[in-house]
Image 1 (cartoon, rainbow over the protein chains, first blue to last red):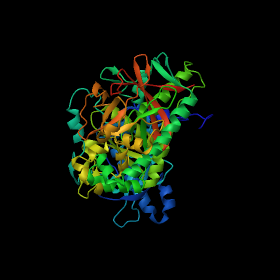
Image 2 (image 1 turned 90 degrees about the vertical axis):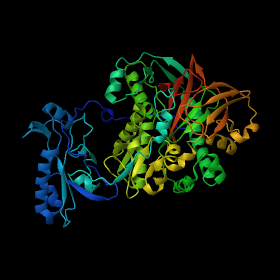
Image 3 (image 1 turned 90 degrees about the horizontal axis):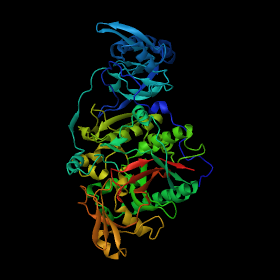
Length: 204
Length: 387
């Protein structure tokens, strides 16, 4: 027995439970994720500045600098774009957005908050990509590392993580899946059975 | 245990929109119903529901332990032979489970009687863990419910903690989540678990069950061809085991939630097994396999398919005659029989208590009402308080 103790969740973060407040960005980059179907993950680190990177990897100061420049370029190309400053700031926080002009017009984009680096020491070359984060109380991106396509890389206090090569490469994924649709046939069979199933769900 | 009428929150539908609760009304009928709530005493909750829930869970685990070691029982449970070894391995490795919901008939006094164990794909999780919590919070703030009112509902807190434990167990930082297409309710349930996973520090990705792929290396993949390493699937094991990709389950090496040993619990054959192992337990109803029906002394029995969902294909039989029947697509794997025990009635409503477990800990309750004695998918969900 646990008398004299509340029997419900002490607190629930309502902000993170909201679904409809945020305005969708106009554009998101290509879908990039981790772990290819048959591959492995690798270590990556996030740095908030060139100095941050150089402090950790003094022998690779030059690479830290070029990787930063690459990530900045990539941020402009693939980062989230908004029509208005207000929309951008409501997602990323006050003073966290600036105007970007390119051939397709002018947009408001969040500032790059850091860059993710992997394989810094590999002779085959390193991977880098821009990281964003939010300071807005209303945003589900608050205090998270967010990639250009909106993928969430976890709490922004975390500086190292394991990700797949794919999440670091800007190019689209290569299909190695041979077939789909091997699950779900029971539902089709049972759904076609009749009309008494009102909801069509298969939970209990 | 009382049913108390209360005015609805004026803006609750707008709130539902804001929080993405899309299935509060289904096919024009109310599912979430806050025109009343159920009130329990702390004693009713702790002695009659919380403690028995944890006890029954342990009894269920004893059944699993017995069944995995017996060919005869595995056959009785209608588990395809190809999965016997996998189930046994998963049980012996103690693959971690996430959650279950036990359904009880409870009259506010006396022992709650177990109807069944939804151990594999329980829904109404979001309504329970989050939405009724928010309802209480707001009704207390509005002065409509006394400040000292509590709720038996630590679901969200426990789910977040449990997901972190599971992540540590498998040494993972990401999970995939899946349910079938075209159902707001299942998608909402899975989204809720994704929210809980995020809260516990996990990255999460979604794929529809129908979109899962099989990669050349034997892994399952999502639509972006990412490997599915860990999968929460709101889709029954008994279906998966009988479908085309069933034969690839072993080689795909997925960390499953729920683990495959739960095939034994989300199975109505559990009920007669519980009665065999724990005869006359106050929270159990007598139950029989089809081939031992002659042992039944009860004149009124409920006939349930070994596999079924949402009350489908259940009949009530009195003196050998069917007096009530719910249609459905199940039953080809056989039936079990359980002594008839009525749900309590509040007005015209038959009330069923769902009692949640996160792993082996009781974590809260949900209350559902139906106009029929068989709770089906047209039932309504009502919030509750402890006072």
